[in-house]
Image (cartoon, rainbow, N blue to C red; front, side, top):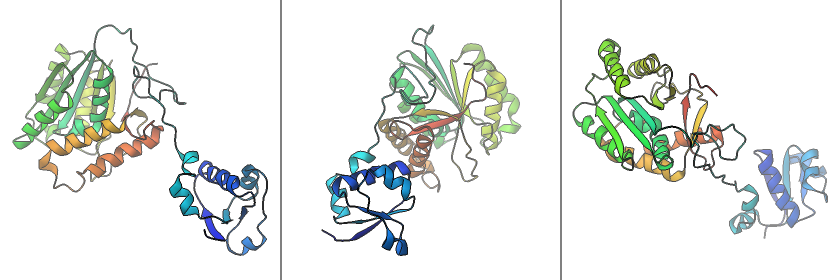
Length: 316
């Protein structure tokens, strides 16, 4: 036991309040006041913690118990433990019972859900929206996927194909295409790439399109995003993000919460199949996990993890 332990509390008010509640339960004579010299005249409250919070915006406590022992024993953990909300299995891109407006895939929709995934290079689809594909595969029984990678030469072609097969292993109806356009030269091959888009449009009418963000710093990514909207003008298009050295991350507004298992599988699959990229400074498990965590914070995801997209037009 430590007599006269000085503890400074800093952080979100809800966390501080939760800790103060515990302090008050354990020791009704907890001293709350301002640090240093102000501590000498700090009042001793024997009332509810709400009064402590109201009268002392900058808080510290002189306690007659060992804070570390209390934390290790778990007595402080319960007020801080976040409740995990369960997501409605028939919905995509929302919190099941949160305060955000839900986007629901109607169970009475006509026909299967057709998903078109477009990536400029090997690993783009996996990095940008691999978790969303895994979630759709788990929740939509009649999912049909067309997966197109526009540039993957040599060793990268095998990596792209094997990774796509791994991500889509639980989907019975799928088509994987690995094309041979030159990396970095898409703006100068625009006519041929546009012809490819028109060919896809003729024989595949997608319910949802996942493509690059038009504000992406990479010229190949921007061209695919532009041609996506040019070709699929009346479709539901989501634009995913790719972290890179250029530092072009923005503020996407469409979020797809993911489970920890889905994110772990996404990261593990990327790491396993794209071995040619391991030498790149940004290509790491930590990068992909950090992105998922950051976007999970942005939408208050049930398990704290998500992918995020830009949406140019959505009709409610």
